[in-house]
Image (cartoon, rainbow, N blue to C red; front, top):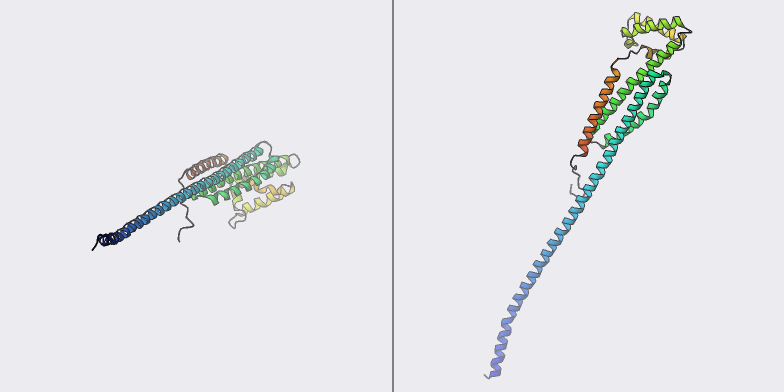
Length: 270
């Protein structure tokens, strides 16, 4: 065999040897490329998830801040409404002491304040949480209790004032009414009005009182004249309201400074 033939055979052998090597190198390169692609996809997925988590956390934080602000405004609005109502209750009470004739106007002025307080209480009870809702209702009840004491006092003062004003024209009737009214109150018979257990003596007193008051045009004030005011009722009601205000503030402060409440994720599977 000549040298040219030997060279051809050698070249063919090298070529045959290089084919598997080339295939092996190509396979390694493909595998490395796939691994790099998978790593890149995992990195991209992790980056995407981190971005989503960051956006979700920011959204939840903003929502929590917004809700806390809504609640804070609702709590403050109710407290202000209660304070306004309390101020009007004091005005009703003072009118009974200084100028009883103005008491009905002061009482009438309290009605829109009561409606406003009731509305704001409903908002707080809807917003919650339960601890604040319960404290809010106790606060409103205490405010109403104080107003009731002031209203009763003012109405009773007005009835007594009108009765005294009739004294000049109807001295005997007024004197008799004062005597029977005192008797009725002291014996607490007026609580038994309409009750089958009401004694005959009390029924007779009530009948005479009605006739006398009708004669001097004060029959509509009979309940006010018979209602006996407890000396410490105003102080007790005021103290109850102050306690309720303190409890409400404590409950709201606790609720507003509590950690964020868990919020369900609408995208999560049920």
